[in-house]
Image: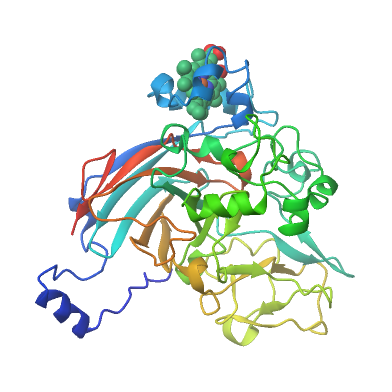
Length: 441
Ligand code: HEC
């Protein structure tokens, strides 16, 4: 596994800071985490508990209070295990229960900060006795390259028996009090009917034909959005406000910051992605840490592995979980341009996405120090986030002494969309008391 990438701090900067008497501490994660208390946050499986369901009379006696903005924990404090059990069982809100799915995952969270950064160290146990570093691939069928591997909630897996292959993820949502009700109801504000794997799935053609989501954003499915970007109380996916109205909300910081550490698509280059939720789940301005490994014009992958560097051009199904070999295509490190005449055989596989630290840039590349290692059944992720990224247009800017609203999620065992485990919203204080306190370095 890669070492954590630590930004080099010049002697000069250190001297300057010392001269002004602010702090002589270097912007580095704590050398010894064992002295920092770990808070256990219980993440639970949320099934299809959408914004619309929570406000329907199926959410017995709670629909009105929820619509009024009462917090989830005002009624459900300490109920994570019970809620998770009901939903993984398939009794409620889960049309496709998964055998062996855990009701909850314990996330151990430690936090520290200095003048520049917030440092989070999180740990959780995976269901499998191997890390979820594999992701869908292109597979050569003797004639053409077709996708193989799907997230476990996909009908190809539960209906057609195709293999479940998807990366593990650790996600953070942050708000600074700008988004109404986020402190009380957290990520449930972003989760709606019509989204992938949710009830009343929006038809691809309807999304493509939608003036905002289709024409303006070029999307073909519905992903997370905030109720503030829709017109009516129901916050139906297609009832969007105008682009001008949404731009105004964004300018007032009315979005939620969403950062995702990904075991296949960001960890191999020591990063996490950086996005936000407003009218859709969007990537911050600039260039993302991963991209689709597909050349549309040539109808073939863009890259293959560099055999001279890693000893192979492609993998096979038996090899994608061989952890002695790299599992991701890193554009600047182990990839070369795809060669259609390289003598491909049926069953050869190449990752569906490539990863790149060298080409990631702008606000989308802010999370440049997020590194996970998997050992003895447990991920340990060390996540460094600049308090002030310099990009207030799509990030939440934090300050020492401030308290922020956080939500955590883990995607475990080859799954995406709602198949994660999530926390109720909690507060994180930068050097000040909160549910989680980032201790001052
Ligand atoms: C006013 C109290 C109240 C509030 C606020 C509230 N709930 Fe509930 N919730 C309930 C009650 C009561 C039930 C029904 C339990 C039952 O039917 O046995 C329930 C059921 C659920 C269930 C279904 C599981 C089950 O056992 O039926 C989920 C999931 C859930 N709530 C999530 C949430 C979330 C998420 C929030 C915050 C956005 C929230 N609730 C806010 C009271 C509340």
